[in-house]
Length: 79
Image 1 (cartoon, rainbow, N blue to C red):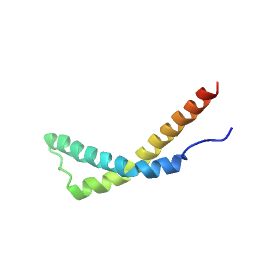
Image 2: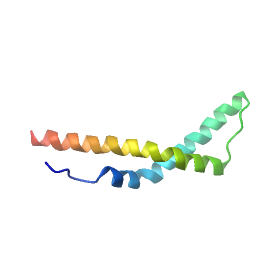
Image 3: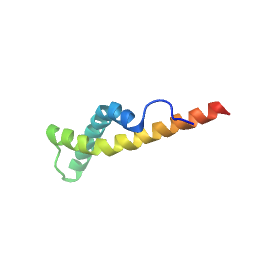
């Protein structure tokens, strides 16, 4: 049986801007929470940069999950 639809890489590339943006927001909010105990607040630039770094693996794992769900859906329809 051949796989239908997008590959994991294509899904990850399409979703990366959203994953990196979400990770950047989470990095900034985490730095705000850590500032309550004396930590520094991350600047916008640092938040964006760390979001791009953390967003890559997070988006890849999410794309693998979506691809798995697509495969499960394809197999369920066949039976």
